Length: 249
Image (cartoon, rainbow, N blue to C red; front, side):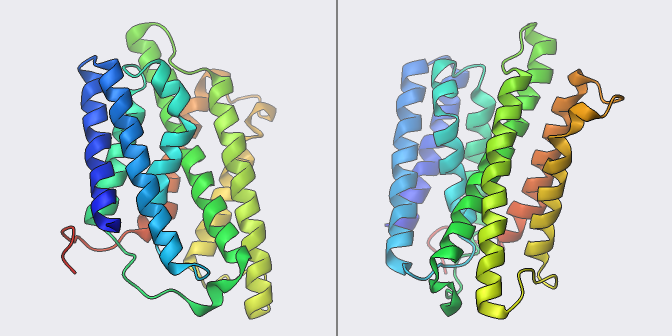
């Protein structure tokens, strides 16, 4: 049921994107809701079966759900102009379907609540960062084609701030958990920790771009797009595995 419900959510997300492109607003919205419900059921069962331990490499299954939840209101209000968000959700979901990496046993050390907060806050932070990148794309490129920006700079900055908040909480919880388990707040030999700190530094600099005089305000969305690409490449792709057909071990 875990795999089937997640596969069903991928199908619903894709059909929702197709409905938005075709201009079928109500149908696309209903399919989006169905995809979110199927996605929520899948990740809920995953968590229920492994709690209190935290299974590895679950981020790709949670990420589309959080992006859909955080962008639901904006997407529902204008499905056609925000269809790019539905496309990103669909792509991320299918990537998790065909490139799973969650078939390893959970770590026994993950039984502390801090490990769960580290994981959940991190996924939420990634969702906001990717969403800010999509918003930045719509703000810049859609403005060139349609004459009206689909998103404002305030929307992008708001998503970055929320992402930065949850990412900081994730790093903080991870540091305490690491200190309690291994006696060190930062394990620099772990590439996940290094890339997490690099992402935190990047968005720390992004939030201070207004202090740099030679960075034009109209160019700031490009940094949000670059940040989203960084997050996908260095914080999302490491959670992916080899190509695998659904339901085949």
